[in-house]
Amino acid sequence: SGERPWAPGQPPAAEAESAEEAGGRARRLRTAFSAEQISTLESSFQRHQYLGAAERRKLAGRMQLSEVQIKTWFQNRRMKLKRQL
Image 1 (cartoon, rainbow, N blue to C red):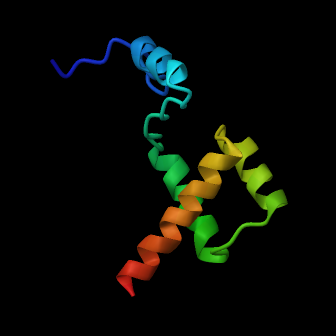
Image 2: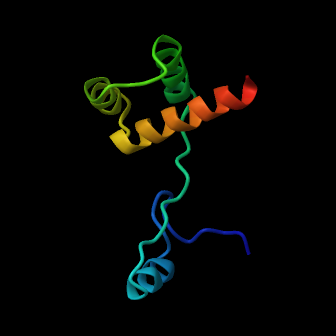
């Protein structure tokens, strides 16, 4: 029906249980970045296309995101730039 009876960012219980039973892991839902977060990430990307661990930790803490989300966003942004060129 298109409705999600679970909280954003968490897989539905049935999917999580079946993935665990199969020995796999449930996939995370796509992160919906706010306009402010995207603006901050883009301005940081304009300065440095690659982040060091310290800068990634600092950004993650300031933006209320995980380091993995920051790292993935930068990887995806570099691929987007590569496609545009």
